[in-house]
Image (cartoon, rainbow, N blue to C red):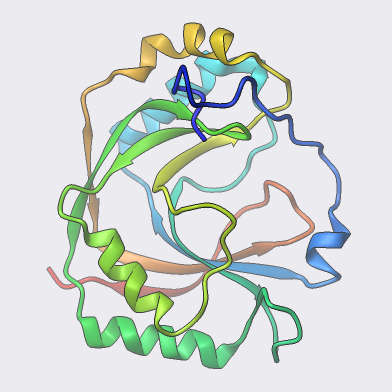
Amino acid sequence: MLLSQAQAGPAHTLPCELRDYPQWHRGRQRYAVWSIAVDCPAVLARMQAARELLGDWLHPAYQRQAHITLFVCGFIASQRQHPDDFTAPQLERQSQALAQLRPRAFGLQIGGLDSFASAAFLQVADQRQQLPLLRRQLAGAATEVRQAPYCPHLTLGLYRQRIAAEAWRERAAALAELPPLPLAVTELHYCSYQAQQLFGPLRVERRLPLAG
């Protein structure tokens, strides 16, 4: 739920504790997602301005590269032992499904500052509805690991403090309503990150260029 929703949103942010979460990773090493890399200078500048505005409300150690998550795969595993394991055959089926679709390059629009209870983000609009099309192809080959409905967004960071929603909206107002910035999407990335590193960097495992 969004902090920006005055009536329906959560009453405050949920701070993230900087520690290992062994009950989540169970000793597994890497977690995989399909994503869209973001390297547009104008978008990166907007991200930086939003982080500066939120200041010490966010954890400063966020190292993950700017990206939009497309599909959450799960923990990379040689064979499935847990519901959130993701194996090489599943990846190959997803890759084949995307290849059969032959997706073309498309555009997204990056909007203003918004927030979930646990993380601040920039809004992402998909006017041509290309993301649902790609996600259907991926979901036909593997079940997504997801606890909430999919909402495309560009994460800025996780909260280190409990902030009342009203205080958040007052500070965020300067960047909440901004004209959209175009973002060209020319390839998809299958990435992974170290499960024991809460904000660790993404490692690109596979690239899928999109037709021009």
